[in-house]
Amino acid sequence: MNIFDKLESKNSSKIFCSGVSYSYKDLAEDLDAFGKHISNESLAFIICNNSYDFLVGYISFIKKNIPVAFINDNIHPSLLQKLIERFKPSYLYAPSSINDLAVNWKKIKNFKTFNLFKDKSEFHFPIHKDLCLMLMTSGSTGSPEFVRLSHKNLYSNTVSICQYLNINSTDIAITTMPSSYSFGISVINSHLFRGASLVLTQSSFMEKNFWDDINKFNVTTFSGVPFSFQMLKKLNFQKISIPSLNYITQAGGKLDSPTLEYFSEICSNKDIKFIVMYGQTEASPRMSYLPPEKLSSKINSIGIPIPGGRFELIDKSEEVVKKSFTEGELVFYGDNVCMGYASSYRDLELGDLNNGKLYTGDLAEFDNDNYFYITGRIKRFIKIYGNRISLDSVEIKLNSLGFECACIGSDDKLIIFSEIEEDCQKINKYVRETFKLNQKNIIVKYLIKIPRNNSGKIQYPNLINLI
Image 1: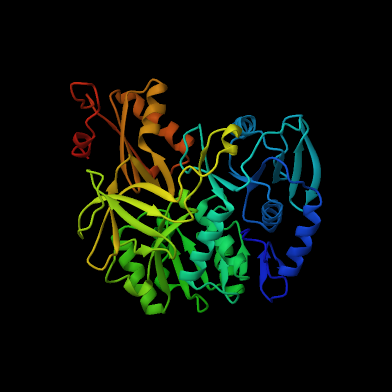
Image 2: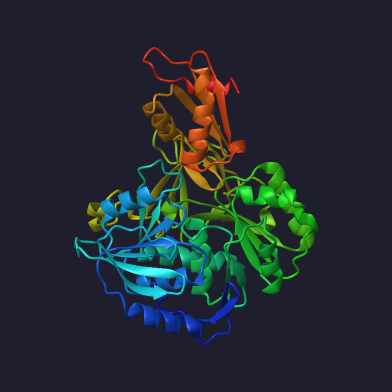
């Protein structure tokens, strides 16, 4: 059930990266050569980027049944070192620019712009046989966990995505998100699985190189998070001509209604399918999609469950909701639900703790046609640029630094109240730098007294009324 077991080396599809074209046969040869340098032991850390060199290492480890943990390439060296200490990987595969590693690493291979290192200590520990990929929980606050995904999780979700998007070998997808992000790697996995072509690029929507690549390679599809489409709207997407484009997918958080309506109309006029999707890293990551023909009539819906998946709503009495337009917690069932979490190497021997059931933490309702709509969140999380951020974790972190704060937010704003006016600028700077947020997504307000109840708990509804 390895998603890369049947990579087709005889088709005509290509992988384009940095001006070079690679056939699937080239990829197969590089995988064979790379695989000779690794053996089936322990864990591998990969510092990710959207490059062919990254791809070869990633697929090689998976084909060798070596579990992989993805690390974003902008990680701070001190955090990387802490993660290495906690998870004790045997291998580290990283861009050549990362060379300030501890002395216990031995370089065993150079592959173009990447280096492969092996830990000299040869520390061994048990790992569950089903473990395949670990993705860091998005928006982590300095003590990150990894989501543990099995081969079955990835395979199941990849097959479902390929089915409802009808991905085939004639498709040409371009990367638009970090490969360390669950949405980003799912685009890569699903297109490789069907033998499609891929354009691997580090460029963004705001760069000319990106649009040059789209036209040069006749890209048929791209994906994005809400911020992506807000930027595309500002770029006057209606004036951009992409004759080869067949469909666009959106996930990573709720897209605001005006932008969604804009793309619904523009894509309809351009004969481009716009497909809204819903997911979480814990679901490998996709859980639902909105068929494009339903976009205008179900404008804010997350759609219907993916093939092989199922939704339930659970009310406050822990009963299954049977009546339409009745709110409850959204629960997903499917083979793509993760095994659980890992906070250190000791967790890697754990099996499947979820048994195919995921409490999403989102409140939802369904309409008379059984299309689902997100209505809120049970837990205090927000999503900014597709990154999930825990308001409680931000608040705890700030309070631990001596700031008297309370945090609320929406899917595009983190709002922080401070009882000390002089601290507002310091808080703003710290949050921007620590959580990698844009200034326009942060509001820090001075408040004489943060409202609390008799037991000292913050009254968040009162804060919402102050906005």
